[in-house]
Image (cartoon, rainbow, N blue to C red; front, side):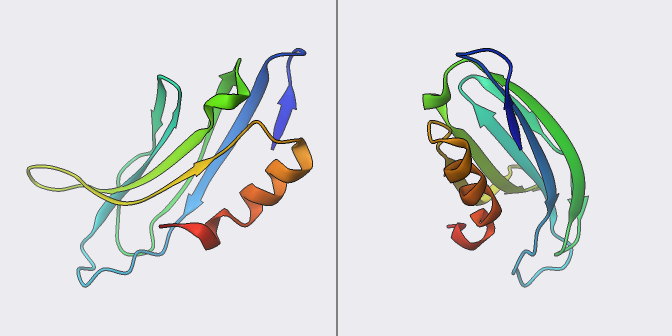
Length: 109
């Protein structure tokens, strides 16, 4: 999931796969926002309660203490609604980080 590009920098690849959104409205249009420090990447907007994005994003992370924030949004007519978010610390060793990423779907709030 990650590899070092230098002793202090980290190249992080994030694959946004899919979601299962439990809303009463099947016409939900949703997207994912990934944030590290002041860098933000956004998936395309996908319609339905089980959106599938299958999009990869790459981040050059000079400081692991920043962390990765993942946000799930519903696109609205006038404003968008935050459906869930999760923050992953990147300052752990690679084994702890891989464990966190593989079980992250269980800890959405």
